[in-house]
Length: 177
Ligand code: IMP
Ligand code: MG
Image (cartoon, rainbow, N blue to C red; front, side):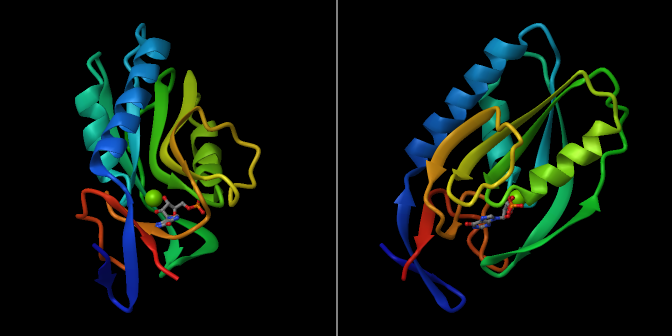
């Protein structure tokens, strides 16, 4: 069933089961790649809080978690300016850092993150994202773990919002045109 958030209508797009499967596959891949390490997962707030939660439940090996807060979106469009709103105060030197994103769109956010973590002398720096808007992504930064590739259309649900609303939906909806 379609839903309305503020002035816009959204239609069901990706089910809770598909999302859960994609996240469990990502967790398995990271387990395979870093079984010898204790990775620290860094969730990008606000959007990634649900992905991080489910990812951690699927990840069965020793790990830590922290969060960083970045913001670039106003309404349904990217502003090209990424702001860091909450930072990480932990020492990450020599650690395996795995960024967990809800969605990569233009890539401005992960570009900014990569710059930020470059100065920290981490051992590994990897990026995991549940969703990738393939046609919008213009950067050369490798995305190490990608859950689901989607068209360049605005979505909400599973942590993703439209001006604050829709984050609590357990499936993903796409903007209706
Ligand atoms: P980027 O910096 O352009 O890659 O955008 C990344 C951030 O913008 C994501 O972490 C989201 O918070 C937000 N974003 C991008 N696309 C969407 C969308 O379709 N719906 C909701 N938020 C989005
Ligand atoms: Mg985000």
